[in-house]
Amino acid sequence: MMGRLFYLLGEGIRALWRARLPAMGSIFTIALTLVLFGGAYIILSNFDRATRRLQSQYRIDVFFDPLYTTKEAFQLYQKLKDVEGISSTEFINKERAAEIFKHEFGEDVVEVLGTNPLPAGAVVLVARGYRTARRINRIADDIVQTPGVTDVAYRGELVRILERYIKFAVYGGLTLGIIALWAAIFLVSNTIKLSIYAKRETIDILYLLGGSRQFIRFPFLVEGTLQGLLGAGLAVFAILGILDVINYILEQFVLYRLIRPPYLALALTSLGIALGTLGSSRSIGKFISPKALRGR
Image (tube, rainbow, N blue to C red; front, top):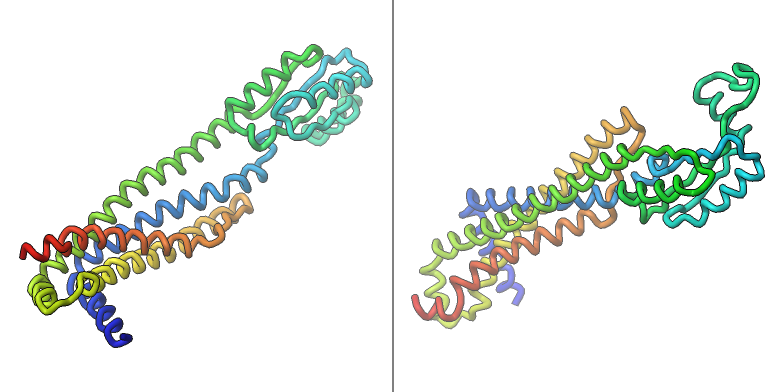
């Protein structure tokens, strides 16, 4: 039994070697497909982490009427907690506003003007499920319509840019990945078809000698699976290398690293094997079906 299994595995490996040029095209296409899908997966996995790091981009600074007393301003601040989409709030009284002004501009506003004209206000953080440009705009509109609120400030344009580029990277990668996926299945199928044509006389002999369809099909299934496995190996190597380069560049400028999602290598390997197996099954089902064998 083991000898028979090793024979079939050896036949699959030999078939792959004989058709090595078309097989190389299949392997590289599978690798490209997996790199695209793996890249999109990494971006999605790092998105939440990146938004937590950039949470200052998802905050809204609220300014109250300068004529309000501290007590009146605090009462107004309490109302902000009822606005939908806010995860946390911080009250900024006039003294705290003066401290922030000095930290930002290096000047003591009281010493410069002789009084503190800065209004009380608040800082609100947008909840994670509301961190899109459209929802932040709506929250800001709700806040600014509150009586006693004179103005709001937030980095809406930066949020829109982040949103736009993240969507472009993810959806672009997935679209290219789907196109490459079909190309990979086609190329694997074509390679297996060439192997079947090259061994058609051997297949006929095995069939006439009573070889089962599973026995005849198995080496070609091994050939396709090996193409998927080799493509997955190349993809994992490429993605890890690209990730190291990107992290090196990021650390030089923003002290930030992209994390590698758990089970990335296992997921890509499984997908690669599935692509190779699916591509080979496509040709096997068409050219080594009972009908095809009887019609030779």
